[in-house]
Length: 125
Image (cartoon, rainbow, N blue to C red; front, side):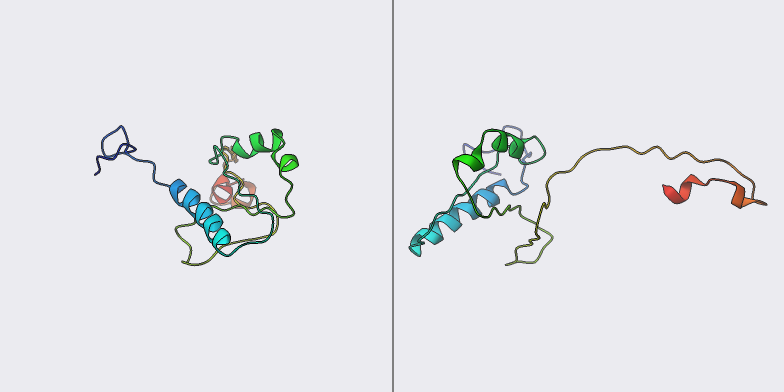
């Protein structure tokens, strides 16, 4: 454990999903591009509340992309299960959010002698 001022206030508890990695990656990209005398316009966006709490929605509603026009926008979230030195990209939305939902599966009982007359919910579940 550590005695640094930013450590968790709860002993042996931390939220270590990689937010520091996200921030560091974006800042290092900016530092690298600056060191290479990047000759272009680049907007680096740090999204608040990126874990499903409406951060992107708030950014859009605030007019971020009207204030800072972009030809392309790439989202980034670390993927610890992926290979080193790779970015996983696809056109369109990706990793937008996760939601909770419930499904109720209703069946109809039957008899082993006529299984075709039953509606077995086990297959759907």
